[in-house]
Amino acid sequence: MYVLWRFGELAARAEDQAAAITALYDEIRQGDHAVRRTGFGLVRLAARPADAGVVPWGVCPEHGNTLTSTGGLTRCHARRV
Image (cartoon, one colour):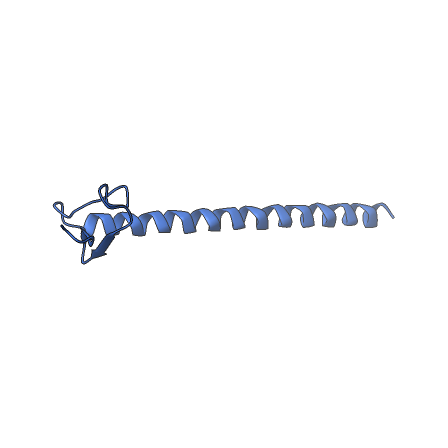
């Protein structure tokens, strides 16, 4: 009888450990995706020419939401008067 009780106890502990391992695997996988996304962003930044126009704020300071970006160049498309 003790052997069966002990086996049940070990089986329950193994299930708990399996659940903990699965949760840890999920966290590692999410971290891996975050690292990959960051890496891809860094590769894109490294591929840009050093003199490429960078507009950190995302809007034209004079005209607002009028920026267009193509081929690594950003331009304001507001009409010049």
